[in-house]
Length: 160
Image (cartoon, rainbow, N blue to C red; front, top):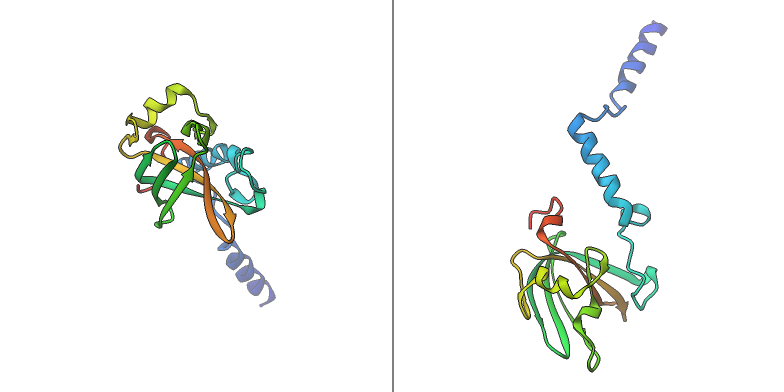
């Protein structure tokens, strides 16, 4: 009787051991691990070092841009996030400040040639453009400071 109880315990315990990943799942896992090179602990994306606030006071919004406009005074953005929220931001520009100083492209410094990769003409985005908008909390409200553009070819598994 004791042996039967032990055998049942062993069989029941096996139900809680995760199965080895299938080949496709393993490759997805490897890809996710490789993408985490930009991420900090706990799967959070590492904030750019150029933000004006402490890392513990930052947030980011990643998704598809719904609306975008820029002029000499400001950059306007409306984004549909991967978390299915719609957020809106205005990034002010100092006098004679180039909007490019508020941009990254795939995590790197924004270059003159990158304009054609995000806009079809001045202040008109390419269709389906994605970005991560970095913000600092000011009085418990996120204030956008930086946009990291992610063109369609770098799109993740998002439905947007």
